[in-house]
Structures are given as structure tokens and as C-alpha cells.
Length: 500
Image (cartoon, rainbow, N blue to C red):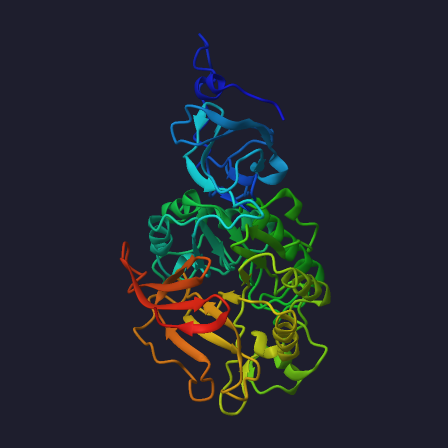
């Protein structure tokens, strides 16, 4: 990697007597960081002076462009600690993924980019503690489901104001649908199908200043869900044929969606997709404090039982059904068996705990449609004596707090884990003030419910994990405040929910 001096980074060609005018400002999509390790972090940006260009190229020419980057302990960049040059390639929509290495563990940093006479906004990031150190308590926020049309991204702004150490996004970063004129704001263009479509849709989302603020404040760990590709898809299977697509067209759409997802998020280069295959599941160690097992419940799952409806479907109990695929299930259980940290946190997409009505009907897109898969996982972490399994979930557009039971048919059976479900950033609009737990009589392990939009703030310490469910009363109007509607504590070695 070519080294550049700080003077060159700051001054560039300003010292030239005759210089052509600089191209238009290219950092309209902001900056981001992610995938922190004890000695490195991924830095991201994409050059897009015209971010909504119909060809998906962001107003850039076909030429590749050199982009300088810097990391410093201060936002003045008086003494850069790491720096270099990376190439933003036309083939990648001029996105860059820099693995900034040689950093100190459990440390805060600032970063920025420069190209063509322009300097990007400054982002803040941090590294994880050393693998054998517990480090500081961690404020981690998690969120999902940000439909641009359903409201404003105020919740992202409130997340930035929390100054977290880490943010998890559990899917539906974008929505793929056509515009709906009755909504507070509209998608540009029709339902996205091509690579140009997906790139333009990401451009529309990422120009939002509230989303940019949340990216700039802390490193992110991300996993996609269905709307990042297509509603309710399962592996190579489409749940319905709307819009009608041939198999070749669906494969092309799937390929484009994964490619655009990688291009627009701070993932390591090893996550770059190959066709319709993308390595999403991975493990991030936060020293001895927590291990984050980020899961993929879309790419390897069997098709939804009984067409994915809310139903009592006998196929949901078929022993061979899987939502993770055998290889990922083994990878997860092998990782849990290592007992590398106090907290084992599973970041995943769809409702995990049993959520059935009195007839035994449930949503077949959730783990209720893959009951043997859930039972194997819960029994697996029980057999391996995992001390603190905590499942984090998105997708459902409501907030929940659930106790995971050894036997869901017996409310008095042992609690073997805890599930925290974040509501949406905007999806389904403002919601309602309802807090009565739906189907509580048949699911007494479901302990909390909220229908407002927002996110969850967790504080992870050695002896406890605190979860504050943060809600906004409106997202169809800008700048609503966030408030805590409920808090719970999970004590080390004692799975289940307690009031602080």
C-alpha cells in the first residue's frame, strides 16, 4: 500500500500554480467503519457526486480513482497513526473497504478520506479489547428494518447521540419495493431488480444525514435479511413470484442484491460475494467480555413450511428442517463450546422464541417454522454449558423481551437463554402505544412488547447485561425524542429477565 504524508493528504494539489477545477464533492454517502478487531477495523466510503444517478454509478466516470485514508487518535489528525492509499474501482461503484491495521486494542480512533481535492467527513471508531482482556463496559445498540418510505430516520440520529461503542444492524437496511405515493417520503424508481437499481436505492438511503450520523459515530456489525434482497426469500427459493421472474432473472437479482449490500457496508474484503453466495455468518470477539456470533438465517434455510403463512403446519416439526443449514449450525455450536467470553451474543434476523396461538399456529418464516432447528440449538448450548446465551433479533417491527425455555409446552421448565427483539427504525410507521403482550396466555415466556419504533441500547458488563428499549412516539414527523419504555437486566450465569 502506497504511503502518503500528512502534508500531501491535507494540501493535495493546492500548492500547484495551475490546477484544474476539482470534481464535484464525492463523499455524499458519508463514511462508515465496521468489523472491529483488537488490532484493526474496516473503513468504508463510496465516491458518488451524483448519488441518485440512474445508472447506479453515482455520477462517476469509468476511471478508477486513488483515495487516501488516515486514522488518528484525535479528530484534528495532528499525528496520523495509520494512513495509505486505496483504489476506488468503477467495477465496485467506486466503493472502498480499507482494513486499517496496526492499531492498539480497546482504543478510540478517528478516520477520514481524501480524493480529487476533497476531504470526507470525519468518522469515529474503536477496536476491541485484546483477546484475553475484558476491557471497558460496552454500550452496544442494535436496530433493524429501516423503510425509507415509512418515516424519517430520526431513530438513527438518536442512536448517534448515545455515543455507543458498537452498533449492530440485524437486517432490512434497505427495502426493495416500488414507491407508495401515500407514504411520508417515496422511493425513487420502480421495485429494484438490477445492480444499477440496488446501487441507486442504497444511494437514496445513504444520503440521509441521520443514517450517516449513526455510521460515523461507531463501528457497525451487519447482517442482511430478506428485504435487502427480496421479501421472504429462502435460499434460492422465492416465496412468491411477484414480480414474475424467470429463474435466471431471480438469480441475477439475488446476485445484484448481495453485491450492492457488500459495496455499501463496512464489511471485510473476505465477505465479498461470489454470485448468489456471500459469507455472512462470522464471529467477532470483544475480548473476554462478549463474543458476537453473527448469523445468516436466509441463505441456507429450507423453504418456509406451508407457504410461510401463520398456520399450524405439521412440516414445521419435521426433524430435518433447518433455518441455518448444517454447516452454520455446527460452526455456531463449535464456537459456543469454546467459552471465550462472559456473554455469547447471537445476532440474527427472525423471531426466535416460540410464539404460537392456542391452536398451535405460528409464523412459518420465524424459528417457529423450523422448530427442530431451534431445539437443536437450545439443547446444544445447554449441553455445552454456555453460561450466558443472548439472542438478538430484528425483522418483526415491534420490540419484545423473551425468556427461552427448555420446553415451551411447560411454562415451569428451565429458562435456558434470553431473547431481545428490537423494533424497526421506521417500518410500519408510527405504531401504537400498545404494550399488552399479544398471545401472552399461550406464551407466558414472552415478557414485554412495544409497538413503537426505535432501537435497543444494551450495556454489557462483566456481571450483567442491561437492555433499555428506546422508543419514538412518531417517525412520520421529524425529530421526535427517544425515551426508555422498559428496561431489563440479565445477570451473569442466570438466564432470564429481571427488572433493574
